[in-house]
Length: 308
Image 1 (tube, rainbow, N blue to C red):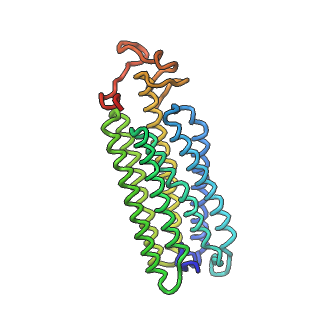
Image 2 (cartoon, rainbow, N blue to C red):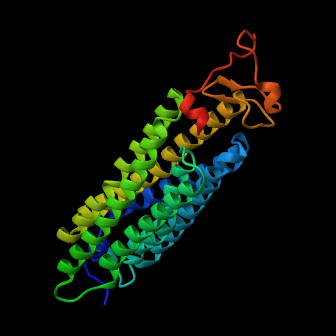
Image 3 (tube, rainbow, N blue to C red):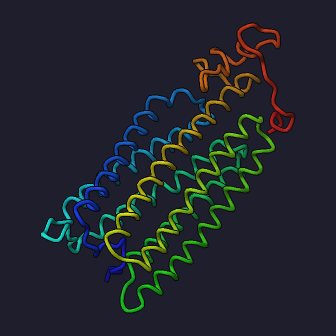
């Protein structure tokens, strides 16, 4: 028995509420499509060391875009126009369920995307990544259990119980990521550290929206709340998946340029960020320029960064 509180799916939407929800779902899907296209065309800007960030970014955008297409179809087929507005049928729960199905893939990928530009290497990096991905998946999966699997007369209590379990995995995921980021901030250049800190703040602050929406759905009803929930989730999805992905990509480019400048790596093209040239093209030994070079001033990393 599916929890009848799920996604406020029993609420009748007025025409304005329905079309407002529809417009945000379409706009979010198109934004994610644009993000996917941009990720496809800019993947070559990043060196092989940080290619995992590019792959994760592509996967996040493509999976999220596909889930929004499925939500759009569900929204169109499960709400029916009547004299009183748009009434949901028994399958309208799919609009909310499809979100969780997409999150179960994209949220673990977001953690991998962040960790791929951190300073951890080797076994420690693999162990941290596995912990973050596993706890992130369980965070979504247990929330899905509470929202959709259990029902009956105590459905709200069970929903809150599973929400608490999901919150526990949320805390674990957050702690794992923060530890990895704090370790990295001491080992990156100041420019890279600023970007890493900004990307982390954006991701973790955006995640706060989801448990808030979860609680709203447990205690409220009506078309107004249903519309507000869908709009909030659409906006948050776009900000995190596109904005966060852009910050991580910029960080990966900057770290690629830093590796080239100190001779750790090579890249077939020059690297620019915000119209500022970070490194020249060529082999690592060719771009390790003298300090007095006219076309590019070599910058050094902290001793701890070089050691890592």
